Image (cartoon, rainbow, N blue to C red; front, side, top):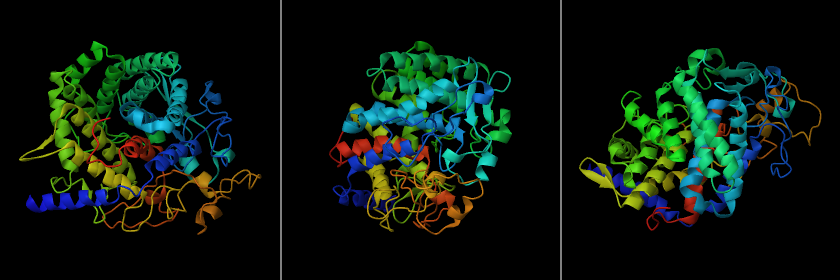
Length: 494
């Protein structure tokens, strides 16, 4: 343990050296701007990413419903509802917990949330139905074309009582509930509509139980299969509805289903598939604020989870750190784990700071400041404090990825090349060693995926070079906080 504590101290100290080196406010602005590059639908007059144009204007028409808008999840042209809803939930959580730190960027952050929630309202307009995907993933992935040129099938997929999808429906309910909190003061009428819809969608998710990966397996797998089951999303949705509505029925739901739905299961992960760690951190706030002692078990779970993230204290095989200090988990697109887990570290440190608490890790403990330092170290790594001295955010710093795996970024814009570029004609651009012609400012790529801190700046290495909305979503809250509190040793709760 002594050696582990030394390693922890070394890792934390590296973060303090870089305190004054990054412009977190600039990074926040760019992090939010990225979402404009991911927009589908008719772009608004205030669109700032000018090389993008309208796309997907007939989405949903074949099914008799308006499904225009929303976000493309990554470097392709499919609209996947599961990660989009999770993205919206995480963007909202950042604004809810760290809203004051967003400063002049708060309104643009709210607009980013609304682009998602407006779409999710369309996708849930029909009772007991959630439209969960637009586009044939296999056909789309066989092309390399701009969203403005899409000619692959825009097939619409939905869950309903005959084809349940409790996971994607409950996540959608969570996103709408979280969004209702974001707009509670700035747009009360919209906030109420979001909450009312969240209530109805959650009721559908809970009443008609089943995983959408079974109902829609051919369409959603392997891209966004739900491997962790739908139980975690039901608890997650109930937790957000309780936070948004303060209705006793959701508290009772969580209490009644804590064991049945496995609140303490698999809490070593957090992401679009597995919500267990997020559930425990979110509900722990109730305990730490002295509002609900019944949920003490969630606080114990959250403590245990935090301990697995602390280098030198954790011996957890699924969470490791590279020689350069990057948290990594085996699998693809590692930066999603980095930003999502770092956000939980920061959120929990915030709750602990308000309560004057510490994390208990067996015979040792950790302060809120220690959690913030670990989170900040990860943010600084993304922004350039790493062995390659490379920022993994496009457009931030002197050196960043230039050949990201992203169709719209890698193909000439409509302004530069008005003629259509067909499905297979884009292959030449995909294979080109030249940098992408369009800078997708703010995009954070998958980054190093193992313990070597290595990064191939190549489109073909999609696991490392593809950006996603759910990498950037939690990073918004992190960057906002550190823009207002650059020294985590001195800062307290938001």
